[in-house]
Length: 69
Image (cartoon, rainbow, N blue to C red; front, side, top):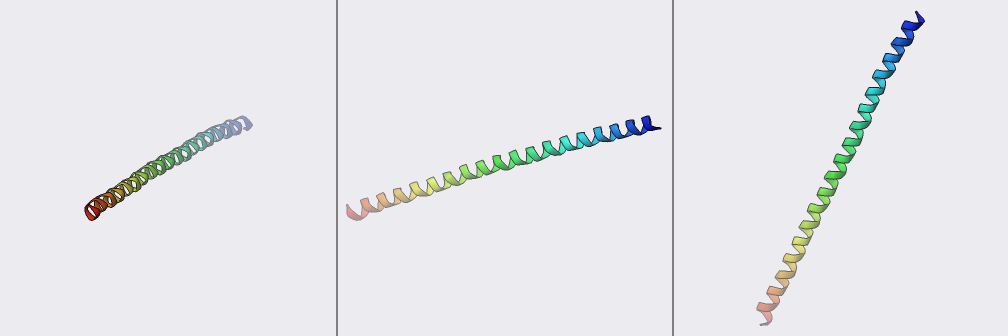
């Protein structure tokens, strides 16, 4: 009877180990996905700010050329 109990416990611990491994992989994947999205978001907004800055500078130059020329 104890051999059956030991085999049963071993199979339960093996299944639990698989679940723990899968859970750890899912957590790591979610973290990497969030970090990737965060980097893409930062790159996007940096580009938007650069565009706004360039448009502002061009507008100032154009205004100065037409106003003072």
